[in-house]
Length: 258
Ligand code: PEP
Image (cartoon, rainbow, N blue to C red; front, side, top):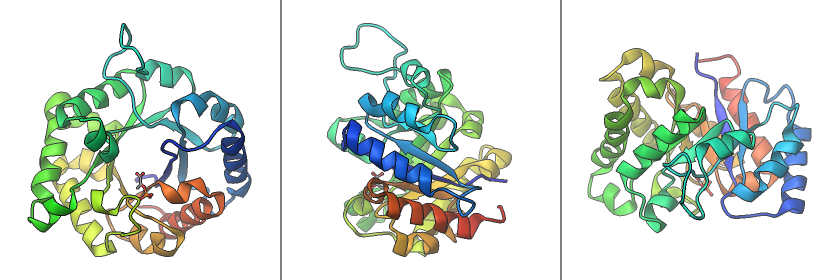
């Protein structure tokens, strides 16, 4: 049975006052409509302790947006997995397309970060996805296979038993353009089959999230697909009412179980 997840990626937005307001509203709005869904927030690193204090004793989980591949040392400006765990995180996003595109993170580096997250007791949320050019050149599957295979080569398939994969087509992130549910499902199935070629049981238990302009209006259609177990939400996670509606849509679809 795969527990659905809705994770909010706050990106580089907010301060202590606005994040307190946002997280308080999320906590207040969660009820039995969202009970089976693991709800996560991933604030900017400096806000993590502040948000951690706010969600203590609630069902809301906490994740980092990025981490170093190193566990400690002379790496100015970096944050290690153990620091995130110590601050209260249980998850960490790795390989978000913005990090791949703007900070030159290669699939090999992303694989090292995935491993670093797990070494430090964090569940990595591995982001994979193709650009518009790659999709138009019919390279979606080969791009995603390459991104997955880099991690499989570093960690082995067993590591995916305690990981989450988020399919985020680059052309849908922050653009208002969402993949059609069937388009997203096709790629999710491809990801599950790719993992299944190494381990069927790991693939069956692996939670696959969709990310890319998910909003209350399109969430249910996406989450209803067989291989979509929740979402990684950017813009709509910064508005409590929208985020809560997305969580409720996930619960509507996955309420019974999968
Ligand atoms: C994201 O930041 O991972 C994301 C999916 O953003 P948005 O929902 O705004 O497209």
